[in-house]
Length: 529
Image 1: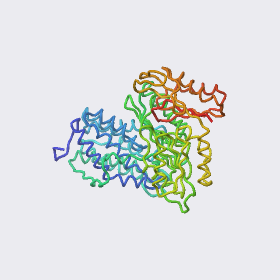
Image 2: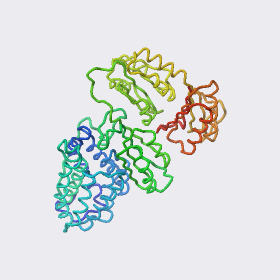
Image 3: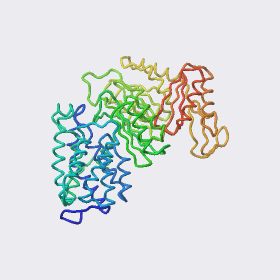
Image 4: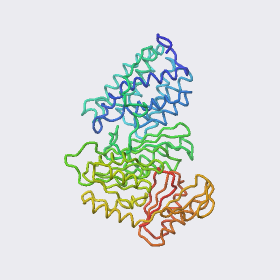
């Protein structure tokens, strides 16, 4: 700020300063907000998610639209996604000029956007405090500094009241974390307008990029911000290439996801949605998005992952490398760690060793899930301080999934390794992939846009239509018979095409197991057992 006294008006020239003040405030209070997040246990990530949303908005402050889009794209968790809408109302107001007289409308708009984003609004949360702020602002007069100062008292009382609304807060004797976050947001705007400097704590030496605060490896434990303990997974993704207007897509998704879980929040930037849900059906949650557009940056968090060493270590643990976080639910269980291993971003030796240690087992089985991950797994087994058995035959996604039927946490590691290796060896695998460049193959020249069909990593067919190529792959896999055919559709597979390919598999007469993942570049994976 260039002025030391109170400001009666903020406009678009204040964009960068306003966001800087907000980041400083949330950096100062992030740990406090995390500690208030008591459901189901303390030390959640409300503060981290809110701070991360502000940081994402600051990455591009060229103009208001860019900052709003950054907030929506970078928002994490219930509180972060809702805060992105509060930010949207505030920042868009800067284009018109934020004054005392416009403040009530801005807060009313923030309240409206936040409630519209949530499928099932819960009172006693940040939504309640936003509504209180919007109503109270209309009853106060004066210039912007005076109205903000008066509002702080109203919002403070509303935050205090949240201690007695939700059972979790009543039991713990604390206010709602998201509600307190709204108070932090308003106080930061107030202090900026009044020329009060906000001094955040210094960054830790290891903190690095401030955006790291919202990043979490898929297989690390986390606490939920709100919602029922009935649902194990937090699923969040961006959805672009929308096939219908964003308002209709938002309504459709909220309706679909409400049937799959709770804590449903969907917000839009016009051509892109940020989608959040707690569920037990990861694949179905992503498939709901696939019906409307192209999901990307899919993040899955396991609320039940155990971050503490059990009193008695398990005898055998399991590390499974699967391409895309969506498939994690297939391997969920005690002593199991799932590592995201997409082509081009396969796990390192260190990542596999870390996952093995998190099983807290004396012996660990490693399912590589990809041909290029086998050497890494063998190196981890050779250099680690644990006894590790590599299921080397499980070198493709279908084979990795096939091994799970043989997994038994009560079994002996050598016997399990042999049984899982045998299960993988009896699974024939194939893929349909899109050519990303022109090339010469054993089948002749291939152009960009062609599809290649592979069986056991060998190209057997090519064509312009993925359905025809998939039919050839299924036929080749069926030559030696089988009982079950697995179909895994990648993120680039359109819904209608996916349905037709699954129908092709069903005509084989085998039992069909169909899944959807967020991984690329494969269009489809097939496995026949």
